[in-house]
Length: 112
Length: 113
Image (cartoon, rainbow over all chains, first blue to last red; front, top):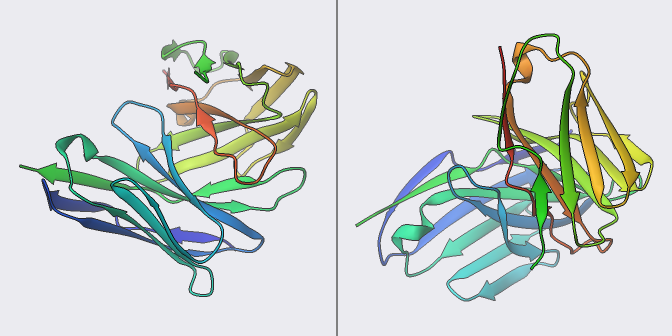
């Protein structure tokens, strides 16, 4: 089967650093995506990891360990606008094309 | 700027009605997807299409069908709407490479009374 786990909610302070964890179990693993979704809006792409290690993109970084089935999204210098849901999604080989399996999302609240 | 559009932001239908949700992308993407998003359940894949007239079932296809007659357009059909199909429906498209991200439309909030 397949399973993706991430915390339901997190709270952090403006200017701080927060790490959102994601663990997964799946067959046919073909990469891991992180998306950001503000309330009432569509998800938008943040990062993609397919090899082990850290990918840095400005204030956001994402880490992957394939052997442990583990990823995290690191947000630095938090801003109020970072309050959103963060979705972990595993890409799987499947039939004619790759499919994404999404976690239920982590709702991050950034407080002043 | 890439764009995925959906025909309606909000839709209210009655039980038993046939419902069409339209999605159009302007990126010449081969792959298109329909999801529904419910609190506590996350995004779940209903159907996807990897080419014109080609479709495959996702994880929750029951009660839905799809149509892809043109590359840019992917339609989700609820043959006979039921109250448990009240949800947010999101369409997405993606290029061929495995590292390509999915681009999402703004979503359609469907309420079935």
